[in-house]
Length: 198
Image 1 (cartoon, rainbow, N blue to C red):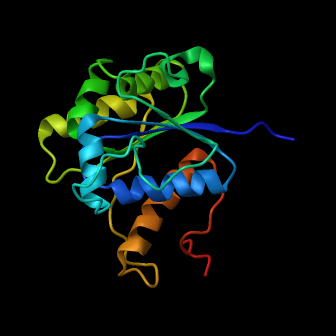
Image 2 (image 1 turned 30 degrees about the vertical axis):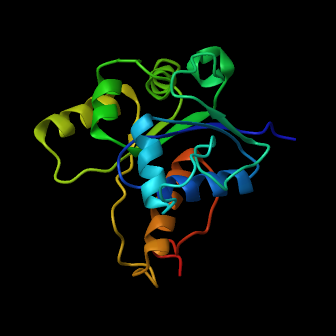
Image 3 (image 1 turned 90 degrees about the vertical axis):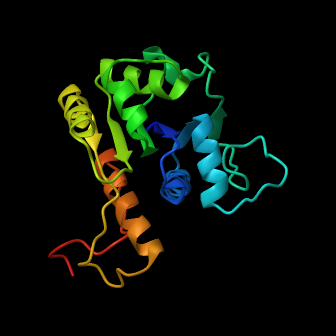
C-alpha cells in the first residue's frame, strides 16, 4: 500500500480563490493530506470571492471546508511541518499566487510560512507549483517567474481554454486549471477532455 501524499497549499491575495477551493476538494477526494496556509490578504480575497460577506470571522481559512486530512496553519506559524525540509512534504501549490509572493520567493525571502514553505520546496528539490494571477505582466514579473522556473518551480497561469466542451462556464475553466495542477502533481484526473483523446 502506498503512503498518503502530503501536499502543501498556499493562498495569497491574488484573485482566484475558487481555484484553490476546487483543488483542495479534489486533493482530499484523492486521499491526500492537505497542509494549508494563507496570507492575510489571501483571507480577505477568500471572503470576497466566496461571497462570505462581512459576517463573523471564521477561524478556518475557507469556512465550510473542513476535513480530518485538511490541516491549517497561521501565516506566522514556523512550527508548521511545511516550514522544514525534514517534514517530507511531497509538493506545494501556491494558488492563486500574487506577484508580490512570486518576487519574494524568487529573492529567497521567507518572511511568512507560505514563503518559507516555498523556499523549502526549492531547496529540497520538491515540486513547487505557482499559479500566478496578474495581467498584464511587467518585465519584473516575467524575470521573477523565469527565476522561479530556473530554480525548479512549475508556473501554471490560470489561462482560459476553448477546445473543451462546454468550455464557456466558469466551473469548466476552473476545472481545466485544476486539472493541469493535478497533472503536474502526478495525480490522475478526468476533469476535462484530453486533446486527441475524444
